[in-house]
Length: 446
Image 1 (cartoon, rainbow, N blue to C red):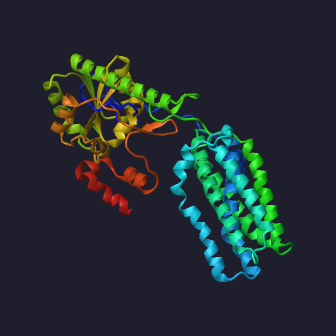
Image 2 (tube, rainbow, N blue to C red; image 1 turned 30 degrees about the vertical axis):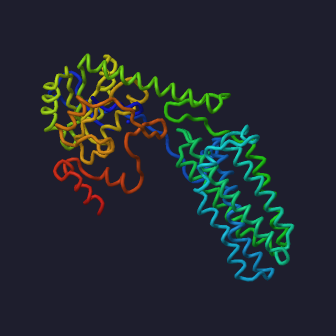
Image 3 (cartoon, rainbow, N blue to C red; image 1 turned 60 degrees about the horizontal axis):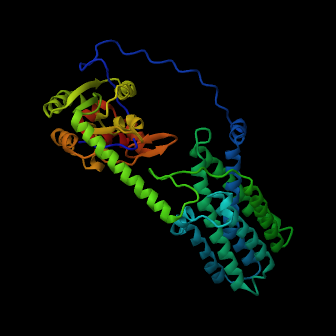
């Protein structure tokens, strides 16, 4: 039959009034509303920090950068000034490995709720705990003479480094959870870096400046008070957003056994739903074929694909699309008419452009790989030749497919920034039709 997209987003287009390519002039492009001028410089910073989430992200960036600067750099300056051996300082610098290996306990921080502090929020509980440990640890370091008790001094420094790296895990998760349209993750990341670099200056150069005018223990007491102040502010900051995984919705107050029973029941219901959908499609034998003719093999494969699908017994409504912006309109129109089985022909971009309309619905998304790379079809094990792909559409099984999601937009197979996106955008469609995947190579060299 076809792969069922229980969660789908891409690019394509066509004319819903007939099978032939339209000869009329292209639709007039809608006029975009004039956008207001983007603020620059300090005005841009003020606009960003006017949002509470962004302002909180600045504080978290400061809280993350200050302990790192103190423990990795400033602490060594203190030890060197009081006469601790260089070999001992070198061994003590190994506490920085906590930041390199924090991925080992990151899953625990992500999944384990704290008994009491967890009431503050899923991420905020960990952040407040780590900042409390850091404030207490830095204050304890100020009370220890490293020339007489280097062992206990090193142990406290290690605890501080472990708490700091764990705090970084929770803050990174908070940043991702809180991202939305007003404060996208790239904006929060930039503000986080601004706070982090500011804290690095405070914990590095400014701490050395203070050490020239007061004792090292007093410097670390001041830094401990800064962390304690951030801890108080963290308690008042917003919680990260709650989320669900897949189809399973966790309800407060249920035991682990209840959750397992609930999950099994949902999986059984989903299995029955897919079986009923499969039988309905086999009984009606109706489908809608929408092919992006701008894809690599779309134009010259469309007629043959339509012929083979009809030969296989499908009652088909077919739409060749040469204006990709029409793809959404055609798919929505087919869904409004009650069609359950939609076959989309094109590449990865075409699939991802319409996949939003299939996410969490009782619709079956049939994949006809006619693009250049067709990595989504390869991931699902769908043959890239026309006969093999049609055989899957006719005789395959309905299955759930996981989708990615960024800012309420689903995507089917992968998302990237930087060079991969630039190469894909820069490669001409005509070149991809002639050279296939090799067409991406010239764009890589530009």
